[in-house]
Length: 426
Image (tube, rainbow, N blue to C red):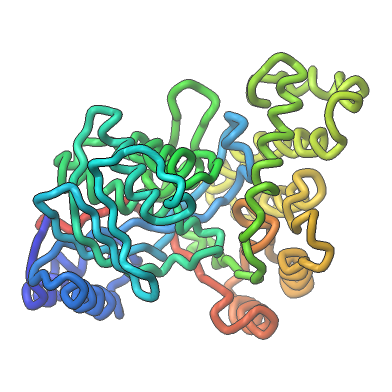
């Protein structure tokens, strides 16, 4: 870990070693040094420290496996170059102080490591939960000052919550555990903080894909998470991977999100199981007549989505591994249809007027036709879609979507090979 002053950081970021590490994280170093130095200036103004260390954690994009992880299925996801950056200095007490542009200072005293009701749905809850998760597993946690600069927009489907969880977990891991905690454990600690302290019933897809970096095939079916990492360059295959923020808000949608695993688990319970991953698919189809008296038709349709989506994930993995982008495109399109028709997470059930995601999908179909693909991105109901756009249609697609959803609504994504990262001397 490098702890340097501003002048030393400016020199190091411009040197061959610094430029190489920036290129690995972002696919290039242009404009990155200025962002880092601006963050350092804000850090110094916030805390008065003259030296600090840089940490980074990526956002993530879900490629396939929409709402399969919480049923012990498989997923395909990728870490992206849009990230959360932190300038950090350790403290000699058990206090965490966090500053981020546009937000009030967050202070957490780690002498208390249980969920606090007044911290629910706050960054303080995540900071406390990460420390508690580390200590409960026999690791260390301590105080720190951190200024955070984020490129991961909130509500964008790129998982800003998991990004800050893994950023905080990486900082604690490097500062107080010599980097000894493995990525999957850090992901589980992030989920623990989000579930128990923040109060959101998330699965483990977001945290694991961010912790691992690259494109990851993740299997949640066993007691231990199994995964396979690979590189992926969509531009080399003639496409840009984009996320479009269609607007809408996730506020008040926790019930919609919770209903999906709840209904799937209700179907599993009808077979004496906990999750759908434990229920044989053919047994489920044969039992549909009897199931209709036990669960809703929507629960049955969402179960159909689980089985079909779970079968698609390894097919999309194989397509990426072989470079067969046309097969990948067709499978991505099928995934989007399944989420729309069976999973039904495109718009909230309680708001008849909210159809922003539906509109984004409609316009994507009109622009891309049979040359691209489009699907809901992440949890759904509001927020973002993902599109696979041929490079020769990229400017047209971007312009037309921005005309409807706003100038900053289209994010062009690149896969990042690393998860949580701390800059060090090579």
